Length: 353
Image (cartoon, rainbow, N blue to C red):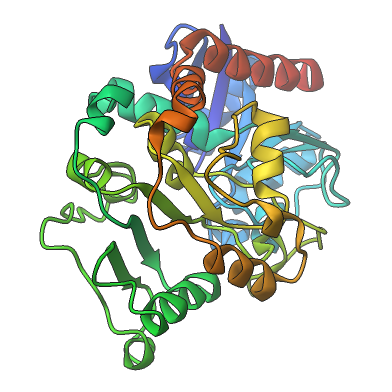
């Protein structure tokens, strides 16, 4: 078993549903408590999603630097790597990130990448919420129309989708939401909030609303127009980017929910997103029903526009039956998902022991 002592918590806690015998995480309650577990050779992991770690974690960081203790920095929950992830730690550091294109970082000694949201989605959907996945046969027995497109945070790519769908009178026929989360009052002037009558209640826990859904949304639509979290190289955005990357591959639950439910999907995302989904994660693309020529266009607004202009009006599921079921089975492969987690733990152990 791998033992961790965390400062500020860690998103790895959510992956324990895969196999709770693989690792043990203790949350530090004080510096003395932290020192006790460091002396026991527990691996130190610091939560990267903290706006002011130098203040909140100052005593821990001082002790870490004085004793040159190797640290894992948990930046798994965001595509970008910001200055607050760095935390002025001078001891050896390992960046843990979900941006699968990051192979090195000038501010960290090592980088480990995992498809975090693939594993989290698997754990939440199959173990915590236990929502039965929709099968191919269930889909073909339903009457369908248009597409599903759910939008939480107001972002440039999602505004582009809103504009296109509104200009082409496609919103009313679709199952479309635009919540304007964290947008402020001014944003709603040009992009009025659109909610669904039967939407999931937002408990503001940062997990439930994002990861649950109504099965009817998938039953009643041909495909999912996914507006991914990163669609304009979000690794380079924000007010404190720590390093500039050429591209981002950061698949989230938005992609994995349709895969889980044998629902065709196409993503407004970063360039080469679908190529990376196939080559890095092994999911099949639905070439028979979608035109992916947009995927390699590096100019963001052109890529989004090209995708939107080629959306199908309906989909013949029989053309992609094998691919839909292959992707669902691949997502549900517990051993494969567990092996991804084990490989990450081994990499951390090799670097820090």
